[in-house]
Length: 442
Image (tube, rainbow, N blue to C red):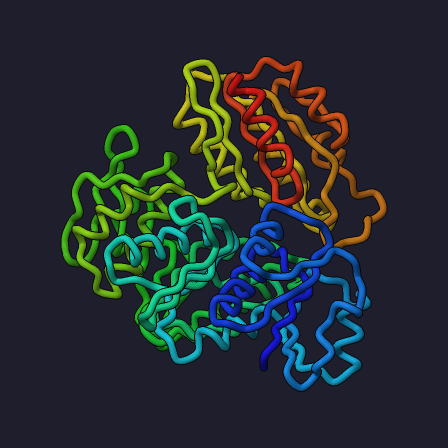
């Protein structure tokens, strides 16, 4: 193959693979629905991107062109139908990642939440320790300014995504499982099928499965060694004992790493750091280097992402889009800034997820002083009758709450006096972030 053509190239997972093959010297190009900072970055790296569904842009040399697509693209999308009907080799993104990982020492992070920060932390520990790794990340690392790392060794760190059962294309040596909470019920149907998929993933691990303490992963599910990790969980194999001001002692089977700190705040990041350190220590990295790397971690864009921090105002942006993630993010923010009035802005992502978890969203979002709730971001879905943000909003018990259209939001926030602001969601709420940060900095 000379050409690799990506349908949905601007997705975070797709763009990492596109960058990988571009770096390897292939002719890489692709389609995405809308321009974004990520597609602009790809273009600046020499990758051709277009934004209309037009088969003229598909390379015409069928025998030498591989087409990669994301399942987020509609099945009847013109370019996808064209390549499927005209003899191209067409594969899903997850299959491509599986092919890249084949024959390499794969360190994978799975879970319905926490996987992006944990996999990025893991890749940073390997890189900062001098061991090195190639990494395919679900977010932009702030240490390296990219979602792709390439190294000369055979270690690969991969985010193992449960969407569309993608992670079943990976056969890791070491894998962390952070959570098995219900999500993507439009694909799985119910919680039992999600658990079944995670157990199937665990069965594909050859060396060690490191499960968050309390998860139902047993010897019946995998031939791999099973270990556990947790935050303030002394029964776990790897656990963080909290000290003051975000510091912690990291207990592991070989001893204790004293007075550790993760470079970004919040107890949830101490937990993610514990999982990443567990991978590194199981692999055999030096404990002292692991401790050092945790402290120099700068985080991931849109994951507990500190935008403004002054005495007057703090503004954090976070990708949380599942009730458990939102609850964990808000709890960490509350703990870090207990004296400030917390205002949260949330944009629900997907009609199906809103329908499946409306009561849980309402409960999680009630733990703020003021909620600004936006309309649903549809992503790949068509509307579901009766499903709007109102089904969350009506049950929120926060002292103050307001429901806004997307086009009303900036005018509203300009008039607000905020002390501690967090924006939450996986849709296009991130487009507001630079403007909000600039406004609050002033």
